Image (cartoon, rainbow, N blue to C red):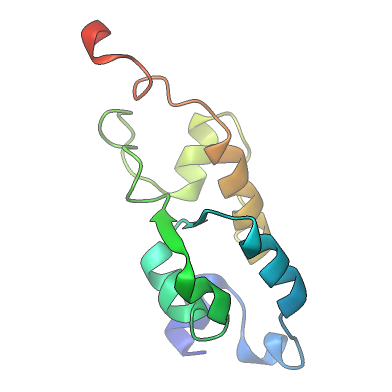
Length: 121
């Protein structure tokens, strides 16, 4: 992993030494998944697809850019912390696990402005 990647995800090569992906578990989850969602999908896809072959056959969605957080929702940006605050959650601890849990929480919340039918806007 590059120094830039380490800084972005908050995990170092040293911390990852000896760690392995549970490929059977990953394959099981991906086999029942229609789409892979990541908050920085372009980065995650480039990083993960070479490591996990099953991902190369999946559709990806980016929760940062594919959802109208700015328009129509009116948020200043799509940072995890802002989204958590907006939806009543606490700040993310910015570990990989915390960010995954935060994203699941945010994606489980309604989008009030996006869900208003065009005739009511």
